[in-house]
Structures are given as structure tokens and as C-alpha cells.
Length: 336
Image: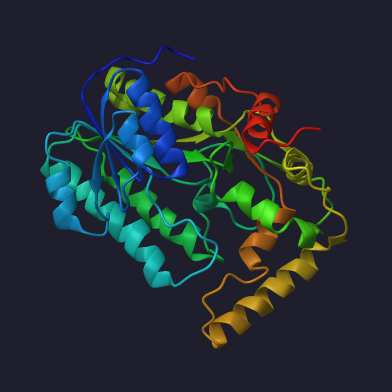
């Protein structure tokens, strides 16, 4: 991995209080940057390590325009990433919010924008094995999250110009200590989890420190080479794993039993379809036990060629999956 440059310039991270955003903030501060975290809440731990904080919502364009004054680099990690919810809520944060970020960057002459997207923008419900960034966007979506992230990603790519350099990153299944989404969800559902499909499907994941490193490397690469502006990159551990083996590893770290029992991918998909129909018909806000999108994600392979990120960004994962699981076990406090 190429050395990360020390800049000491004003850097702003949207969603700085989130799992990925917080990791990016910490690494930027460690190398000497002046960092502003923009989130809806105030975080005492960010204050302790020296981050300036702005409490704001990316859906508010006026606040963003004021907050971006004097900023040279923006990492846009904020998003609504839930499985279930109203389309209007996903659209407001992921699409309108990103539009506001772009507008604030342009009006304040921000030089660099690094946007956190998702591989789900190209996921078509079928196996994806070793595909690269040339794969087209999906032609349909079974969830509002990937649909709105695809719209937002296209907007960011279109915003690339001489005055605003942009790079889009697509991390897949970010995990590690401090995760407040993926790992807690697995642990919470441990007793009711059923393997979907054959259990042989391979997927990419990415450890939190590696994901944060990739974002900073993308920023530095844009400074060195403006021709990279507008590019999209998959980032991962560079070693796909069997999804259900990884789930069992996480459960073991938490001192829980592995997943027992299974259902066919077809059964899970049909269950998801019926749950979605029922929950929408009766306007139930709670996340359904299964959805079509989740069924497809759990039963298919989706791993990606990251040679572009290696070549252009100098990205290579420094923390292995095994080391990451050790760090996770130390944090959770469960010993074998």
C-alpha cells in the first residue's frame, strides 16, 4: 500500500459518527489532518480525539453550504442503509442528500469528493464471481437502498469536472469492532438464522480499517492523478469467503452456536415476497423477517475483482480476515 500523504488541510466527513465515517475520521486525525465530522448527533469520543463537529442533516442544503466553507476535501459516507423502510426516506437521504453534498462542494470550491457507494448498485439477484467495474448497473432493484444508491452514484460520477475531482468506492459488507449494523444483526438473529441455499456461495467482505484506508488512499490518489476522477472501484479483503462460514465465525467470536438448518433459495425468496406484500399492505414499519433482496444476497455469490483499486489507488488490505476476527473477539470479550 502506498504511503498516505500528510496534508493538514480542512477535511470534512459526512456521517462521521457512523461506523465507517468514524474510522475515516480517526485515521485522518492520526496523520495530522484537520477534520470536521458532520453528523446529526454529537459524539463525545470524536471530541476527545480532536475532531471538530457539526450537527447537521445532509438533507438540509442550506446548512451544508455553510458547513462546507473552507473545506478542501469531502468524504461522503452518510447514507440510509437499512433493508426496509419508506422509499421517500431512502430517496431523501441517499439521493437528495448526495445532491446537496455535490452542490455544497461546487459552491464552496471543494477540490476532492470521495463517495461511499455499494456493490449492490450492480447486483441483479444472480451470482457475481470476480466481476470488475465494467459490469453495468442492475436493470431492476428489489430494495430501495441499492436503487437510491445507484441514482446517487451516477450523480457523483456526472459531477466530476476540472474543479471537483471525485472517486466512488464500493466496499462490500464492512465489519469489525464498533460495527453497529451487520454483526449486531447476526448476533440478534442467531437463534432463528437459517442457511439460505447451498451454503457454498462466496462473498467479499472488508474489515473496517481496510475500508477506511481505501478511502484515504483514494483521496491521495486523486491529488496525484486528476485523470482518476470519475472512476469507480470495488474494495474488499481481496479474498472471498463462504458467506455462511463467515457468519459462523462471527457467531463463534460472540460465543454462540453456528447456524443450524437451512431453506432453499426459492423458499426464502417466496417468503420474502409474501412478507413484503403483507408488511406494505398493512403499513408495518418494522423490518420483515425476510425480503427478496436479502434472500438473493444470502444465496448467491458476489465477489469482485479489485485489481483497479490495487493499480490506481495502491490499495491492499493490511488487516487479514483472521486478524480482524481476533480483534473482534478481543473487543466483544468472548474467549474460546
